[in-house]
Length: 299
Image 1: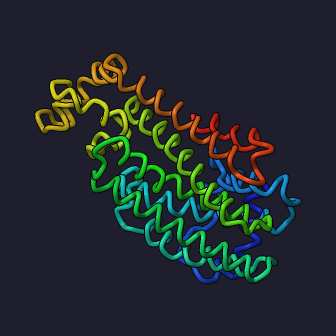
Image 2: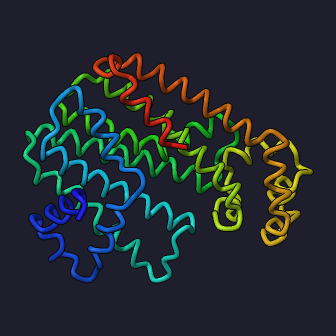
Image 3: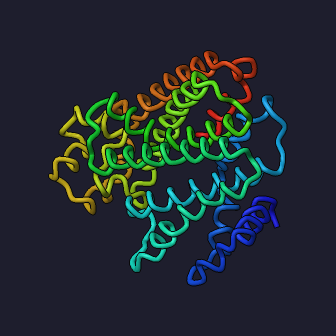
């Protein structure tokens, strides 16, 4: 059994969460959390290492952070249609577990003031992420500035949740440091979001973003060409079924008319902004490679 799974089970057992949610298959959820390809706890640990020694409290805190973000991702996927939840059981479980998971922070042996600060940053970040998701769901993105605002809230806030939690757990109280973590987390969230949008183009028949006519970054670029297949689809001159019948041509348009190259250009621009923001962050500027390596993991 992997270490994360053991830590989560131990946290649940000690807080008697399993007794409170007898109607849910928590073992399946713990398995899903423990087998994800990217753990936000690792981003959290990157903000502890070099400042403080990692110990059992940090391992427990990392497991809680991974649980919180897993649950928010599930709600996001349900809203996007990527998870089918016809009976509402997955959403119900997420709504029940989010406050219970936050309550696990009280079980950790950090000073009460540290726990309070971590709770505050978790709640603030979750609210900001929800605001970003609302911008995405309502198709409020009209230009690059709107997109960065949406992505830095929707995805960046989750990176900030993990990074700032790590800094606070390591004993950092400097507000300038926390502000910088929020800044470069926003750039990292934008990078991750654009890579996800690129995947949506190549997975046109399984990804729901195009089906839902979301204003994802490659589409935003293509809106200047109303005669393109995607332009005709977004102006309701083609149905989704018709768009799928032109799958290869649609992908070719994104590649050859500049949308995909522009995505990679904007990713590089965001990477430079991310690196610059890390360099300007007290405490972490001496070892930027420790944080910069996470850029590669976004692709």
